[in-house]
View 1 (spheres, helix red, strand yellow):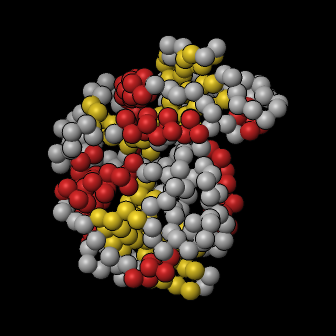
View 2: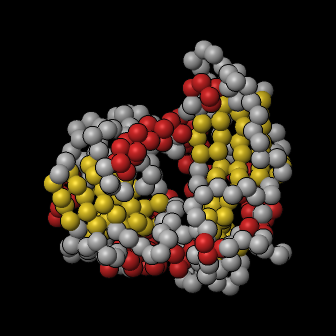
Length: 341
């Protein structure tokens, strides 16, 4: 298929409407067959549950062109499982895992002309999401739901190369103890918006959120999980019931153990420990790993030994190995890569 006339090398991380998207409706206790449609417009009641009470959850994953020319997605089964967890917590019907994976494949195949070529640094970003659609004025779950997937070509998260980030320790809580921090619900991201704008206005790239109960342990940034490296090259990731289980972070943990032979600890990480780590990174779909160079705690600076110019050596090796797996340069573990075409 002939590609769209797009300047692949200069794409930003922004929405571009593509030709097809997938939609399935839930009513009277069952999902319909679902279909690809051309209309990018969503129509709903002014009293739709999603508009009144934020009953919505979503996922994010990418499709890539690999070195050998195949179009693939990365571990969509885990996105399906995480959406299931989110839906259950928000009293929404589960969209079946096999149908989720099939819908992802349909959307990618139908928008093949928008999948960036190998080597461009760009990818096709997919956004599956679900929301309560019918009118609800009392505080209760919706009865009717819509599951959709759209896609959009996006450029590399870092334009012009990787730049270590400067974070600030936030005065805000990202999630409540025993709340919804472990799911990918839209409400969590709405909660983080003011904290994010406040941090950016003060000159910081992102927030470091601490645990909401004791404010002594590292949680996440609101959009990514943390990954630390000790001075003896041990990989450490925070563990908490209010952290979103990042698929990228879980993949990096496997890569660290099985590909690089590194020791890995998934445990509670106290903020007092951060000053003793050699490297720090943020794990997420958009950038895979974003290196962190400095963390500021109310004026007190913690400067990572890896510096403010490039990734630390262990973080870089993790990044190169996982992106090599995604792009087909390195053999993937069984089941990680779903070939679309």
